[in-house]
Length: 126
Image 1 (cartoon, rainbow, N blue to C red):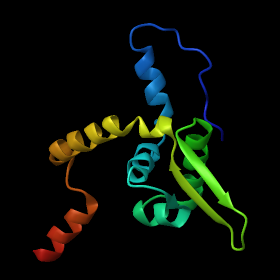
Image 2 (image 1 turned 135 degrees about the vertical axis):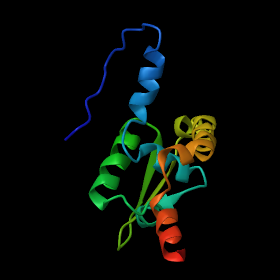
Image 3 (image 1 turned 90 degrees about the vertical axis):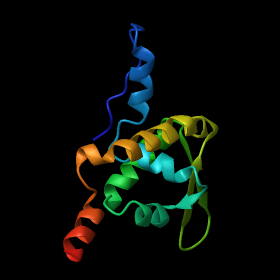
Image 4 (image 1 turned 180 degrees about the horizontal axis):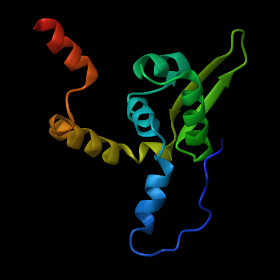
């Protein structure tokens, strides 16, 4: 199912926030963008980095990010096919926002319970 796109924002206070959030509103989009800050990655590299994403969901999120101009997709003419993803200049401009989200998340993750990996380690140690 295609993402519903806004063609026009009403320009009330906050519409720029709505527009920005609309670009990264997918479950994995901001995580994908964050990992691409480190450089170009292939599909399976991204998939291994984000363990809980399904291949179909990752494909959909990457397509939407590409359609929105946040990432670049480079296809090499070879067998087997080689596809690389990297941040576009527009995507790279989100670096301070993504860094701020990470800092906020690091500072507040305890409010939302332990991440699953830490919970499993704590249970095994007990």
